[in-house]
Image (cartoon, rainbow, N blue to C red; front, top):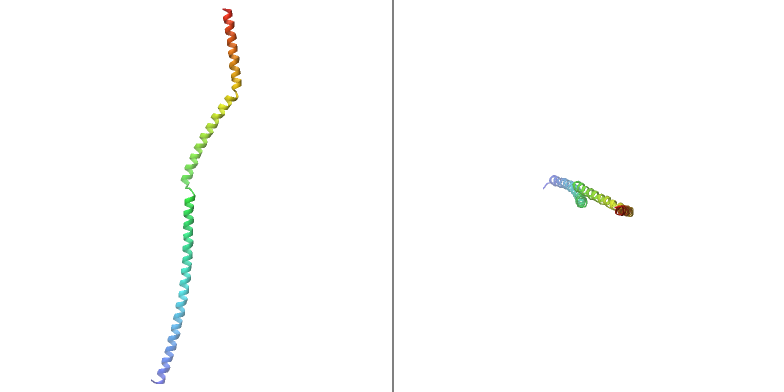
Length: 124
């Protein structure tokens, strides 16, 4: 082989080595970018899973607006019933408090009627 051919082969192999080195360097850079992207995707998936879990926890712990309104209405109805019972009891307590006065009036009226009856019996 002539010398020029050898020089040409050396130059071609040097050029091939340089091109291979550049390709390898670009592939490594692409690999690093892919690894970074995968890490970001994993991080985002974890955050998404956490949000899904928090949403599920919120749905389990909190009642819906319809349930809230239903429970509020039921509670209001029970409160109204309790207020009515308290008013009824207050009325009975008023009667109990006035019982001595009422008994005194009944006794007074009874005595008056007895006296009138006795007067009528004596007068007749």
